Length: 157
Image 1 (tube, rainbow, N blue to C red):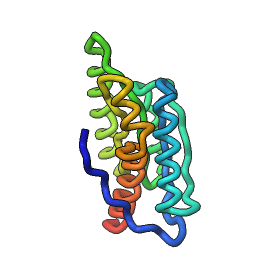
Image 2 (image 1 turned 30 degrees about the vertical axis):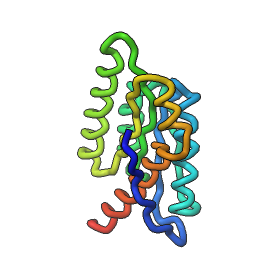
Image 3 (image 1 turned 45 degrees about the horizontal axis):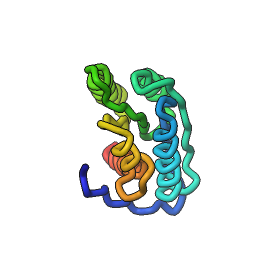
Image 4 (image 1 turned 45 degrees about the vertical axis):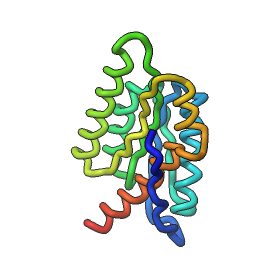
């Protein structure tokens, strides 16, 4: 597990960006804390920002929802959150690879930052460390990445 956490971007005096969070309902005991932490961090960095929450049944469906959001061109960044726990078959790896490729393709095709927070872990202990515990919380990390990427892309334009 990486021991580094991205630096917190500067705080905005008022909201200038809007975000969407697309989150899997599967493994909700882990994905809901990811959502809560991402939402809280977005509101610290961009007070009063518009944050839309879109639910996906599972991680495999996240790219479809992200694409639908990206096509609307209403958000400056999209955060994809999900959790895949490895089992005894290759199924988890196939889903994780498919999601990763699709999220990158959507980001490039629509020129919107799509922040990849769909985690593939070995067990519930590792899921807890990344989704619920605060020290290396991936919800916080994805929010910071979304704000930084959205600001940078805005500055480039």
